[in-house]
Length: 428
Picture (cartoon, rainbow, N blue to C red):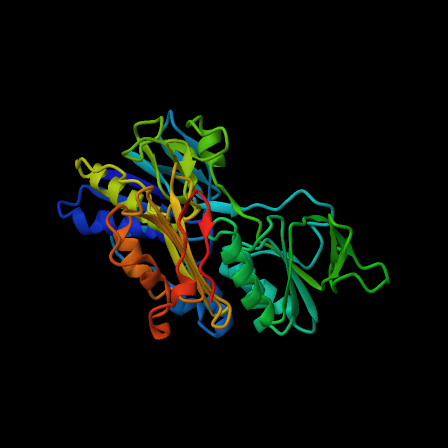
């Protein structure tokens, strides 16, 4: 029997182990999983549900398996490729094959004060428990980053009873998923929940208290008092969450001499194999054709590929579907395909209803016959139909697809003019 070591026990690592075990009927592989966290795999996509009362046990995605040796709280510190062993603080684990599923780590901008007590990242259940405990008795909070994770963190602070600010360097919220008009509509929803939004500005410093009351009991560290922004403004905050993106965790692979990308990530081919033919990488730590994907769906696809490959199969990574549909602060948001209209000669058709706070955009081919992508804010009921139609013929008249079903057919004033590479708005 051959020995497989899996480095990491996140959602993608767990999916990989389950996929391999379900297919390995001949028992070719003995599996050891080395996990940094003291908890078995849990659902990071639903992480914020913790603040709605969902317990850590309910978030678990781990399935006990007597055929898997799961070592919690035992991170890999080194991989010796010559001896083919993974080294932890507790011992050495020989391997015939090794899979990196180390995920990513939160990026913390290099600003003064980032190490103050009261500054947190938003990545693990331990992070969320620490935020919850620190928030007791506090009044104000700020989130650095207005993307998906930043808005989830803002909602968490709001649920904890803090007056909350969000600071985003880009000119709009969720700049990766939505366009300018969609970001404006999303901002209206967020501000209606008494979350104060600051876009087009950056945090230049995090300042401590200066009144002699700034030390957390039992520590020597000063506690946070607020943020200084690049536009010169000041935000008072008793607690700060940094949600400014993630970076691939490739340090152990890099130190072992496995090839990594210029911008990070363990370089893999279409089979998710690294520069070492005994080592694979999957999930957010892996760079396929030099690109890392920060979504779980591509990671699951990679997990299936490597499970197949280790059993002699021919599977290859099919590419990533970066479509997303989610509910943030009670608002439906979705994007799919070429959401930002980067295809040469493409057309935009948009629908905006300020009364119901719905914004939708379709990106079409230059002959207006093929759906290329789109953005939905406020009502994402059309998402399944639209996503399934990307790359094919439109399933109906564009505006009929965009307008909420309850609205009925829009009148003449709502009919858009389609202009190549520009948005043609239909406003209600």
